[in-house]
Length: 262
Ligand SMILES: [Mg+2]
Figure 1 (cartoon, protein in one colour):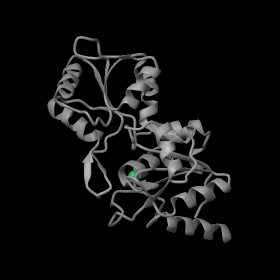
Figure 2 (cartoon, rainbow, N blue to C red; figure 1 turned 30 degrees about the horizontal axis):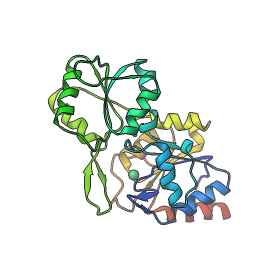
Figure 3 (cartoon, rainbow, N blue to C red; figure 1 turned 90 degrees about the horizontal axis):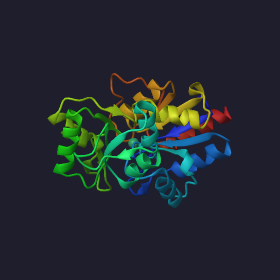
């Protein structure tokens, strides 16, 4: 297979599954590093900051820096500035997401009595009815809706699913008709951020992930090559265009190693 300059990896389901490291992940990242490749991790995680995710990777034996983690949590504030300028923002989401908004100089909109230009929604473990009501009222009074990502659910260690940001967005959309702006995959923003941050050429960069709709469609939309890991998929979806498929990271590593030998 083709050798690339840049390798962008999804995290959940690709490098780790919940609290477990996926077989071959540390070895693959290590060999790419030895080969002088640029590596970054693109995740739709809106709960943890890049700093916390880097620490999580380090506990798995993967030496990643904060800069190598590209996630909506940290760049939400910058995204809002680029789209809307400095704004009054009502945040439904984690403390890390709120920090990102405040750090960028936006003003938090605490309740319905304060001005609001944007309702920003990420995964919120303390979501409740009043937040939903405030969000839909702000939107009906003219606020834009921004989603960190649109994943409906998120697998936990038992294999069961728990609600993700998309489920909260769906609750808003069931109340008011509104289309969200989206920061995470499959939208191009995270991909472009990574390309820019590491000065990568899309033609020399590949996205590796386990989700056909976020990782592969998103990677392709951003002009990258794509590698789909199939372990938990029965088949490649009919409408999907993907460059390479492998069962898992071990198989991918074998293919790369054999290509080097040839
Ligand atoms: Mg994944």
